Length: 239
Length: 239
DNA sequence: GAAACTACCATACGATGTAAGGTATTGTCT
DNA sequence: AGACAATACCTTACATCGTATGGTAGTTTC
Image 1: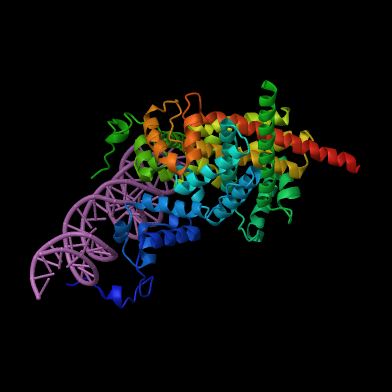
Image 2: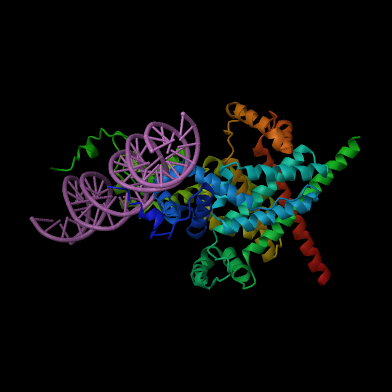
């Protein structure tokens, strides 16, 4: 019996009518799309293959295993983040990167936990660039290490928190508000401070958790500036 | 054929000779142990059951499903974190909590990503307590929101980064150093700043990424203090 | 002594990643 | 033109996963 090769040419196919050729690159992009829509657990070899109009095992012609797919997906996502040019002042460079990274991670929430586990070229490129910016501004190497660590930790942590909020990003909280209201009453007795914070801050219509990012990143960048200035001052005195 | 009930009494059993009775609590503790040793992917219903000396399906007598096990595991882990007493000053309270949380998350790295996805009683208890500390110090509600957001984001983000480092916490980096050395040469051409940072900072014997936590948490707490003072000052002026 | 409850077990199903071993189409070389 | 390999796909099969369904044996309660 010949393989049912009608699929390939005449192509009345479940997911893709008249298949476009599968490339590693296209497979990775479709994979990112699947993960964006249904979360990382919605990405299986069979579903990805189905979306591409092929069978699961055919993916292994293009990639070594699923882990390599995840590597490629992270690379795509990290590449979407902006890298400031070499002549940007360090504070703007760090700030722009932070906002860009956060925007990208909101679009691809699954990437947050995958990112830290892998080292991508795009991450190295960004780190190299930002070290350049900081060194140009006279930062010592230890201070560069400090700065990178705080900012990266904060941005990733914030993205993680934001992604796990029950609010959908369009701002339509009405669906969950009822549920929260019910919890409110329960909390009022056991956790009075939390209950107060809920009613006077978080449940206010103008409150959006996302805005907390402005405060946090501003505080951290100012703190880095202070620490840098202090270090420079000490070096002056020692001279 | 009767059930092979010899197991229960005479108990020459694969994992546990003469089984201790299984309780929900003991199952959760064993589950935490398994995840600590082999990561969260090493925790399956069958393995957990095996460790307890029972069959997989018997777990469903004690818990509704695996998700409930994860809930319970997170509850255990979060309960290990210290909560400062109500009369502790806000800065010490936040600092102690941050260090305690980080310590616990190093012991249970799998918990980092599980934590944010769930709301536990222990988390609520902590948040309620710390809001109390901050309010007692005269923090406005929005400022409380700011403070909690920065600190929590930073601590979780830092734990995430620290957990994904290839260094084992005993400080024995010799195993990976060779690998890093190889990367060093590769980077020297493409990413000169990174290469320099590697050799002059990170690969120095006295460098430990964990120490960056001191800088970050100090910077953030000082920043919060400044922001709070500024807010109080503004309120004074407006009066 | 019957009924209910407690704590476990066997079997089975669909989903997962992937190892092993095909096959049809296209291109290259002689 | 014929041989042969490279390319891009497929089938089958297996272990492992969470869990639905429906047991059973021992203990308590009435």
